[in-house]
Length: 76
Image (cartoon, rainbow, N blue to C red):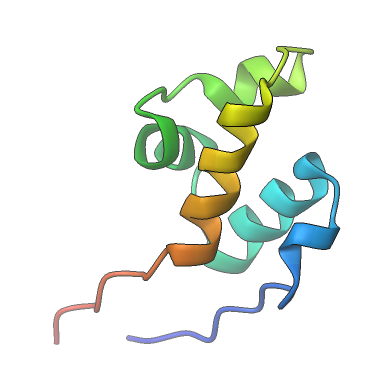
C-alpha cells in the first residue's frame, strides 16, 4: 500500500503551528510520533498546542526534521 504525501513545498514560510499541522496531515502522522521522532519528546505537540514556548533552536530542529523526513517504505 502506498499513498501520496501532500505537504506544502515551502513549509519554511508558514508559521510553525501551520507547518506542523500540514506535515502531520500530509504524512498521516500522529502528534506523539512526530514529537518522538523530531525531538525525542512524544508530548511536545500536546504541550505546544497548550501554549508551550518553543525556543528558536527547537524550532530550527523541528523545521529541519520536517524538511529532511523520508517516510519508510511500506513492506509488500
